[in-house]
Each structure stands twice: as C-alpha cells, then as structure tokens.
Image 1 (cartoon, rainbow, N blue to C red):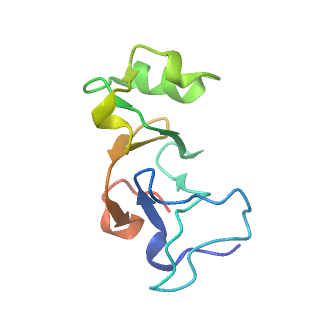
Image 2 (image 1 turned 90 degrees about the horizontal axis):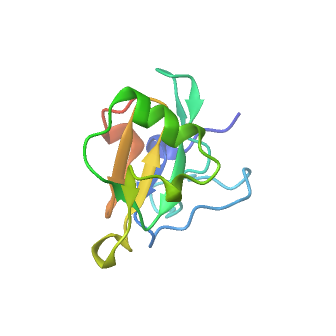
Image 3 (image 1 turned 180 degrees about the vertical axis):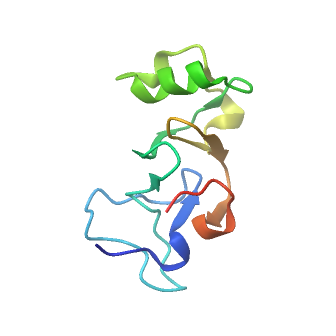
Length: 113
C-alpha cells in the first residue's frame, strides 16, 4: 500500500481530496489531500465534511454517532455558517478536528496515518 509523503495533507476546502485512491501526495511539492486516512486508535478510516465544524467538544457517544451517521451534516453536533464554509471537518470514532489551513498529518497528534 502506498503512503503519502509526510503522512499526507489535511486542509480546508481549498485542498482537493481525490476520489482515486491511486492518487496520493508523492513529494514535498504535491498539494493533494489524503484520501485514505486511518486512525489506529479506534481502527477506523477518517471521514470528512466540507464546510462544517463541530458545535463544541463532543463526548465519546457524539463522536461515535457522527462517525456512524449516513448523513452527519444533519446532526446537532455539527454546524455550518459563513465562517465555516472554508473549513473541513475530519472525524473518526475517537477524534474530531476542523481544519481551515493546511498541515501534514505527521505534524498532528491525532495518530492518523
């Protein structure tokens, strides 16, 4: 299995996340979002919602409900407004993070890879 350079990028909605799993960040200059992040802590793939953020700190049950939902954008634990439209909400079963900028996954403390 291929691995993104520096663990891949997470970023706001300005960062394209390809549908093609064969497309991944191959070097320093490659500006593409990771499309197959995995969390070893909860053994789940990381999902995302464009233009949303969490509506506060979520407890374990709310994180699980967010992850399990077929329509997470309809849950009261997330919201969108003008300020969030450029953000991207990343979530697994144990971690929720909204990213507006750009950072390498290896520079975070979420444990995702």
